[in-house]
Length: 212
Ligand SMILES: N[C@@H](CCC(=O)N[C@@H](CS)C(=O)NCC(=O)O)C(=O)O
Image 1: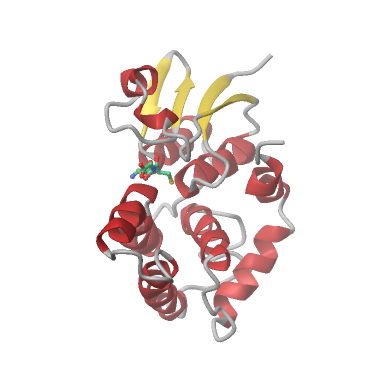
Image 2: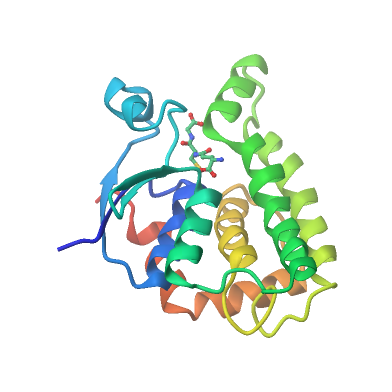
């Protein structure tokens, strides 16, 4: 018996964020695979769920939600996950950290963007890898610098996993997929180590959601 349905794709960073948050909330969910590689997200059936033709989509509490950041905030507000600090200035700073990835890096590395840029590059040999590295590495360097302003204990913004961790870990998975050099990013590496030990992050890992 599940409490929610997640329209999901294993390698989707935005879906990965929502899987982590559902696990943090202890919500049992039924995953329904929307295969982005074969174009299932553009099928009328999925466009009826989300006219943007994107995953994730979450059915929960009798409502249908899209946009991973909106879903994370909904889960935080209804399940009191403590994803953001109470103080308004600290909240703004924590959001800015998370958004530096979710709003600035992730969209330019989306499947449709990578495919379009590959098509425009006229067969250049290292597309879309060059494209991905060009945007991911500076985004992560900035995240590393921003982290210096937080008290890492051991997560990005404190003792418990929060919004920034949920946005960072899927981006790191994606960075490794595209062979982005992370060796000089010690703060990121220590957050990654802490998250890799946390059951909510472990259970959300793409390898556990890959098609068999
Ligand atoms: N801002 C949206 C982005 C969702 C998104 O970009 N999803 C990707 C997978 S991570 C997708 O569905 N891509 C399909 C495509 O690019 O055509 C969110 O955070 O939910």
